[in-house]
Image 1 (cartoon, rainbow, N blue to C red):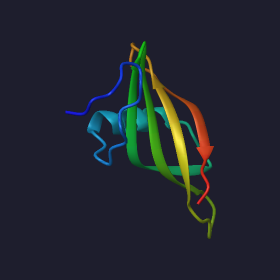
Image 2 (image 1 turned 180 degrees about the vertical axis):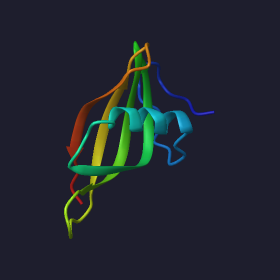
Image 3 (image 1 turned 90 degrees about the vertical axis):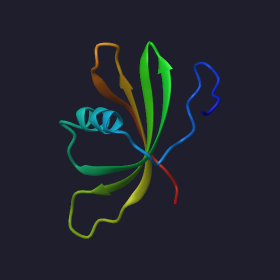
Image 4 (image 1 turned 135 degrees about the horizontal axis):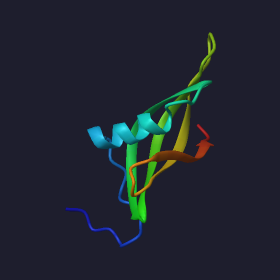
Length: 91
């Protein structure tokens, strides 16, 4: 069992659960232009839950190259997921 401080993010884990994948897919439901593939996730419990997904991001056009990105998603207490921030990371 990992020890995390209340309100802080958990350590990143490459074991992305089915529930975590659902949150990710629901948040990106109407997103177009770039495909994001989650590689690892960290979570923070607030009035709902914040997710930080480390991803490979690939623009949707021929010959596009992937780059690392951090995607932050908020899941409300009602279960709605929304993207709050996407940051392209340096290689």
